[in-house]
Image 1 (cartoon, helix red, strand yellow):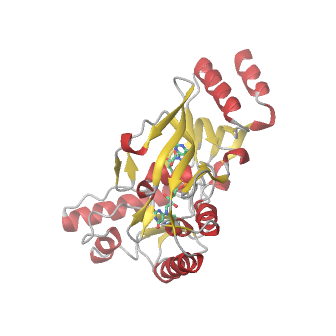
Image 2: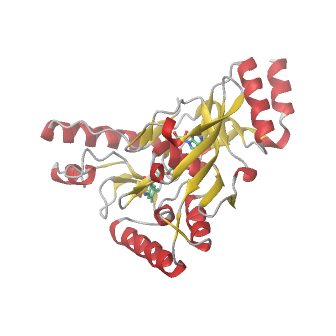
Length: 301
Ligand SMILES: Cc1cc2nc3c(=O)[nH]c(=O)nc-3n(C[C@H](O)[C@H](O)[C@H](O)COP(=O)(O)OP(=O)(O)OC[C@H]3O[C@@H](n4cnc5c(N)ncnc54)[C@H](O)[C@@H]3O)c2cc1C
């Protein structure tokens, strides 16, 4: 116990207790985090990993929470969200940008445009952070982050040391990669291609408009709930064709604009979203024998 008191004191305002996770997920759902840690810099993060190891405290990493559903009972252990010093954009070569892992994707897209770099426009359509985008290999309209990644820097929470990993040494797949779950990404180097600003701007606006037409906005959702099975077998199509698009559980509903987007209408519980997920998954399986795989991450006890 006294160890734990030392631990909470040691990190001052960077470490809080009993923090409402609903404020950190786009679903606006979830119980409390036992500990919530927002490191100021890498040395504080390294120090924290040494302490949690000593105290046997479980840790999970969080970006912008646009792909994460926290359970109603919250998280035992520490949720780590990178503090503001991990949010930066730097031009380090004619066509190379270094970004902090906490930087929002749309800020990176805007920074690339300001520096006349194309191929990063799709990031303006993804509401997460760079750390989340690399973990999820996020993308849209035939682009994804693996295509523009050069390398990442990350801290290994068990070894308590920082490493750099080249893109060639990471196996990216659709909405994922094979990086160890012990790594918290702290920054990344991304590559663009020089082009005219007007061309980049037009492409960016075009992507944003396409998104507005096909996806709902200003709702409590984490985007696509399930991964697409293939180009022909999109998850939304399977959901619609299996007759699930009008399913609801309490205040957990399915967007009528994009039926792979599950939504907290207002007073849903995380359990309602999870039950809705199970109901849709079972119905799609019964009708098609296809097992839909989750794209969103469900965290908690
Ligand atoms: C309206 C809407 C539209 C969306 N459209 C798209 C789309 O077009 N394409 C698409 O691919 N996705 C889309 N998404 C899903 C989501 O935005 C992406 O998956 C996004 O990249 C998640 O980033 P995040 O920072 O919010 O991650 P979080 O939800 O915070 O975390 C997701 C995962 O990444 C891990 N993680 C986060 N940061 C780090 C880090 N620094 N180090 C290690 N692990 C980390 C977490 O542990 C977790 O496993 C959409 C979501 C919404 C709400």
